[in-house]
Image (cartoon, rainbow, N blue to C red; front, side, top):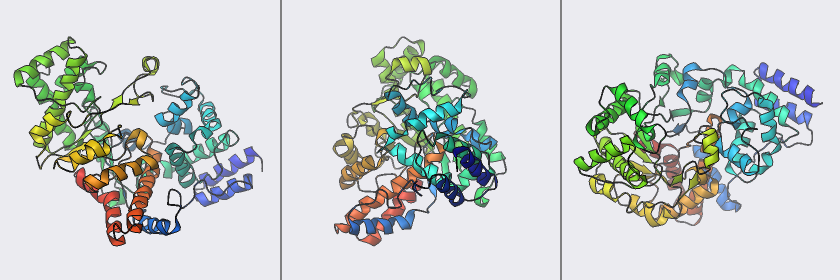
Length: 504
């Protein structure tokens, strides 16, 4: 069977709505020497048979539990319009900074990948570049996430390469045209219980409104696609267009955002608008964890400076620090859970930033001080029972030295899962090893996938659940925990902690 015949056969299978097993049989006939699975059923489990057996028993208890995604970057518009996803390159390559970051590191120009283009001129060419360089992802979590989607969603069983690039492109394209691959159908197929987006205060949230009014009722209930309040564009003086954004915030809320008090009222009103559409959390992507508690008159004077563009770097950082404390105060009042994602040097490659804008994979982790940085905020709200602050880090050296002791003491603090560069099997194990001994399991919040790549959500949760079972199996095998307790913890890590932490 030649390649063109194989593509036609796979397209026919998809158009008839047959199962992925049938697709696997077609690809097997096309490549009789190929493997029937891209991924081993026991992947990530311990090599030691006794511990592996425990991990597999634990995993069997939780593998089919619903997925809760309380923090991510998918788009509500997908579900409001429920239109077919585009071609494979637009869907899988263009939005995923894990992918194009790696390709760029090997000298492939982002122009060749058409990064930033609204519509791809030659998506098949972009896909071929990706496929020919797929070997670069060996040993990375990106490889696992992609192979999971290729196998479990599309029924593809031969490894992606230059030789299979067109086979993949045509098979995936055909599948994306079917009703079961529309966004709403995938939401149901993934067993999603909650899917949170990340939204600017300047967003009208009309797509969230449209989802609510659509009449769509997965599993007999309204979908829980919730906005998350991400105010960086109006609280960070270094954000492009900051002054204009603040003015727009005032216009949207009917407040005079050119004054300190009016600006704070505008933010509080916007938070209430988000809450009305189901928002339970805020998210803050600051460079550091620095907080401040300035007297009202000094804060107002600082606001005037940054709005006029007269503040330098140090004053801009002081303003961001003050705004984290203001956001905490508002969370005490309105109950929104606060998330802090500090420690990324954003847009490190200035040439790429100037050519392609934000979020093109050139963000680099930095050391982060949580102990002294958070103290002004914790002095005010650290003991508040109605306040939850979830801390993330890109600085793993802080796990046992700072984050676990802080979360192991302050009632308001919880630790988010390994984030971004550390969202990997090894990163998850390092987190458990260094955090559990001081903070335990119950000062953490389970897992969130934090992704723009919708099709990777099941894969990411599957990796997290497997690794949690690996860690728990080790504790059981070492007689540090009974297996019935491990089963309970596994359920908590998969679902219960995230529901509780995010007030879902």
